[in-house]
Image 1 (cartoon, one colour):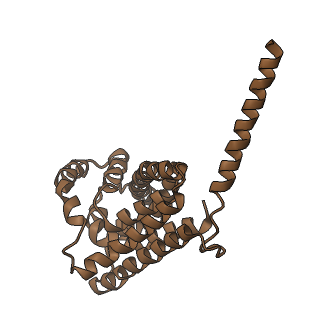
Image 2 (cartoon, rainbow, N blue to C red):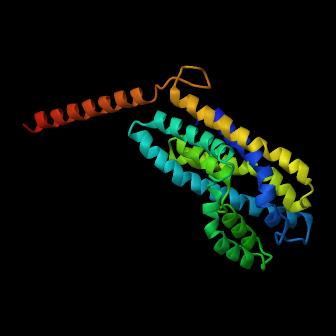
Image 3 (cartoon, rainbow, N blue to C red):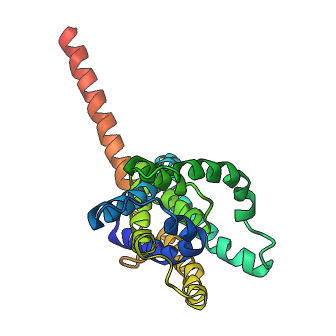
Amino acid sequence: MDIEILTSALILGLVTGFHCIGMCGPIAVALPLKKESKTSKIGSAALYNIGRAITYSVMGLIFGFFGQSFAMAGFQKWVSLTMGILMILYVIFPAIFKNRFNIDKYAFKYVGKLRFRLGKLFGKRTYTSLFLIGLLNGLLPCGPVYAALAGAIATGGAISGSVFMFIFGIGTIPVMFSISLLGSKISLKSKKKLSKLIPLTIILIGFLFVMRGLGLGIPFLSPPDKMLKPHKKEMMMHKQSSVSKLQNYQQYFH
C-alpha cells in the first residue's frame, strides 16, 4: 500500500482524535484505570487504546474484503472513485441540508445496548475489562470512522483495509491517551476550532481517492492505472504454461 494512503489514514486519525474528545472523551476520563503505580496507569490506558485500534483493524479487514472483491473483478479504479466521492458527499450533504441528512442519528439506535455493556465493564478495575472497553468503544457510531471505512474499501484489499484502519486507530491514540491520563483539559472553544479540521481532512482524503481512481498519470497523486493489465498478462502466461504442461503429459502417456 502506498505511503500517501497510510499517511492519509494517520492524519485522519490524528484529527479524529479531537472529535473523540466529545464522543468518547467522557468514557476516556471515567476509565477504571489501575492506579497502583504510574506504570500500571499508563499500561491500562494503553490497553484501552489498543483495544480500539484492534476493533478498527477488524472493521477494516471486513470492509476491505468487499473492496477486494470489486478489485479482483477489475473495478478497482471505480471503487476508489466511488468511495472518494462518498467521503466528500458525507461532509457536503449535512452542510447543504443543515444536518437533516445525518447518518449518525440512525446508527445511534443500538448505542443504548452498547453503553449498557460498557457500564458493566466500568465496574471492574482490571486489565481485561479495560481492553474490552476499548474493543467495544471502537464500535460506537462515529462519522470520521465511517469516512475511514470508505477509505479501507477504496484500498482494494482485506489486509490493506485492515492496515489502513489500524493506522487510523493509532492516529487517534495521542489525544485519547492524554485524556485518559490527564482528563479533558481542552476548552470548548478549542474543541470547536479543532473539530472544523475534520470535514476538511475527510474532503482532502476523498479527493485523493478520486484522483487515484482517475489515473491521470500524476506521480504520487494520480498514478496511471497499470495494475490491472500486468495482472491479466500474468494470468494469460500462467494459463498458457498450464496448457503446455498438459500437452506434454498427454504426449508422454500416448
